[in-house]
View 1 (spheres, rainbow, N blue to C red):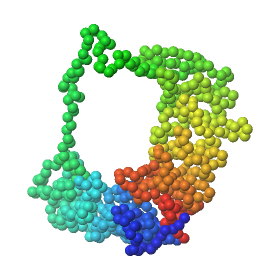
View 2: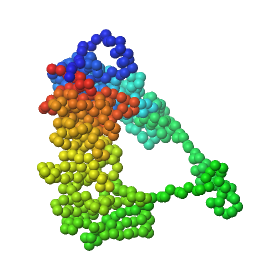
View 3: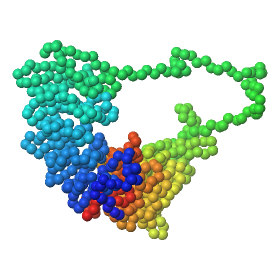
View 4: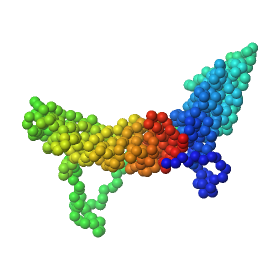
Length: 569
């Protein structure tokens, strides 16, 4: 383990520069003693330690490029490694509309507004944001414009549009006595009334979007309004396809109802009136090949008639399909005989050209053992039988049971899996079904064997051999999903569930840290980092970042996949 912090310098090795010319720099909170600052991924200081603490913004619109800073009970903001708001605000709000509000600690609670890049939207603090609406053609690019209606310190009002691409404001009305907005969503327009000064008459205006701003159409007088026709799909809220007609796709003639289908002409006949006597092309065998035999589908359903177990075989899926009922031969002196239904898919068994599908199964107890009969003629008898529910994302198809059997020598339980065809596989001393906490259910389960822990999937494949001293299932902080914290020889690593096999440095890390892992960020600094099974999506590929904690659960700092620490002292 090593701390890689170094003071900022203008001289970097040539090979380092060549590798990072096109790469976007990644900023990471780092700690020196009790103070926090910001460094880049290489460990070079960007902002010297001066904050009491730094936390990530948990809103997906900003990824993890927005840091909240705290000092002496006040808050500030760091955006992309730059101090956008000094820690002198009572509170900070990062909105979903793409701007950030800093509320000042004064009697009137003035507010400073900046955009996602840290540029000030208002030069001076305002008393209140009366309204804000996002709109424009750039909505899909997440750089849409925003209409602001603000109340200033002098009790005068402004109405303007902020364009984040050009980073400038276009004022529609500035320093007005009053502005009253009312939108008509049905007609896709914004109506408002205003007075420039208090004694002025009330003027009514209609605003429509030109894609970049809102254009006012002033009335001829206070009673008559000029209403401009707006295409139905146009909207000052964000009509990204204003006035564009949806393309019309015509169906091909071969699928048209108005064109009749003419079948191809029949093959030449020999005149003997038998298709089997037709002349074969040269080089073709005269012996006709037998068509492959289609399988027979048989539905099997168990039932109890006067407590007598029977199996009903239905040959086909039609209502009038042939049915054969057979009595089942079960051991004598059985208890708790019952017919259970499958909660998931129904198991199938193939025998020759026949495919048997089982709609339910039989359970009972005998001689203090639990028994289950699904597809075989003989029931499976074990000390414990539990149905498991592998998720659809795990890649496992069908029914899965956990069987438990006591060892006759030491009395300890041994467990194994059994599928819907009563095939048994894998063996271990204990199974822990890990909660996935709402993310993709890849069903990585923890097993214990000979005092050590490992990881298995529903197919019975060992993802990690049982060589670890401890495996703890953890919920991803500020996100979705789970990861498994591994411990071996006093050090910690992790594994995140994916359908593919674990890849070192991506979703798996052998225990190398002397500190407990608190959280993992798979593609830092992007929001997808907090999906435990994530991979690079939408072309956004980040770095693996790991949060570490002490024995009390307090955050120590961060580390990379190579074991390098972004904290010291």
